[in-house]
Image (cartoon, rainbow over all chains, first blue to last red):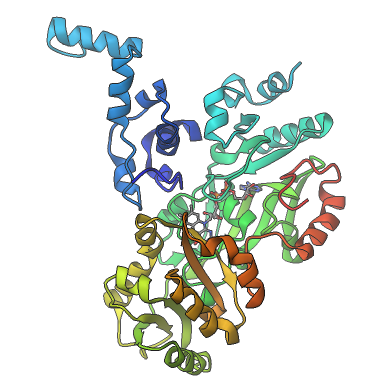
Length: 96
Length: 364
Ligand SMILES: Cc1cc2nc3c(=O)[nH]c(=O)nc-3n(C[C@H](O)[C@H](O)[C@H](O)COP(=O)(O)OP(=O)(O)OC[C@H]3O[C@@H](n4cnc5c(N)ncnc54)[C@H](O)[C@@H]3O)c2cc1C
């Protein structure tokens, strides 16, 4: 099921709790996904799974798929690029 | 200075935005501003007043749909000020769920289905209705005091009768800064889950229950709702009793209510997402339910209060003729503006917001 944009997942989302802005919410990601729009905002997610757990409608906000699409289109954050390079060269995202 | 520059001068660079993504997130708002204290809210209102720009306060945005204004998101005003034995005082942006977690042996008795995300300010402004509405009423019944900045930029404390000038008015008279809410004891109720094969039998039982002094709540679930919850294909009433009268005690009573709490979402999963909240004259209920049944429109609600919520799918043909049907049954949609409220808001606006900058277009 598509996100119905009710916002009930927001209360427990650690990103929303941290920045206290709707823009950071899973609902916003659901909205962008519904608009078939890929945006770097998909990286602004802790991938903790809380929005899936909290969604009373069992809707799908597929953040990983949204990221996959971004990567395929060459849209990455400098930090994620750096992490990928670190994994390739040092076997660890943090060069350790 | 442009408007956005002026807003940034008040709240700081990161707390005002007209960036596209922020505007989309806030329902196509023109700009969004995130104040952190009363002083900033006051300055935002004064700025909007000078510029003649409409602004709309927002809590968690679980009820607010339209924007097209400057949105004042109250999420950063999220401090719980006091938790006392019989009241709690909190800033408007505090989530009800966060208040709930702080209470021991006491409860805030109005718990809407959106309880895990809605804010205190949003609940007061919408006069939200909770799950056991017959016993506990709406949010307004539990509000002791509200601090707000009105449309003149004046910081006011409203108490007693004056609370009617803010509760349920969706921010049209002022931006709520904080509120003092009364608490109730966490009382346990016994309950009964009653099954009916005919609506006539249910109506008879309802008449009997209405005269029972021990009855605290009566909640209705139609056949579709009941069957989705696994209760079987028949209409049901959940009845709450003070004392020992109900067969379901403790965890069993809670289980029946927990199932009911899940109902809007179980219906939502089947694409029944558009709920109307109707105030029905009691004598119309059976006839109205028969009509919904014919069109396979599920319905539930605190029937003991005469409130029913039919729920429509996006593709429902019934949904397009509801206004006509509701008129026939003398049913009033609760959250729709009507001439009476508009007249009252107009009178209050003359005093609290003569330039009509707050929640413009919501009522007038
Ligand atoms: C799935 C779902 C279930 C729901 N269940 C219920 C229910 O059981 N009962 C019920 O009554 N409602 C229900 N609602 C509607 C909504 O959740 C409530 O009205 C809730 O009180 C809104 O709170 P909020 O913080 O999200 O407010 P918002 O949605 O942000 O705002 C609601 C209104 O209040 C105004 N407002 C918000 N904050 C302030 C402030 N600080 N000062 C002045 N005005 C302000 C806004 O301008 C707006 O008009 C439900 C909504 C959803 C999506």
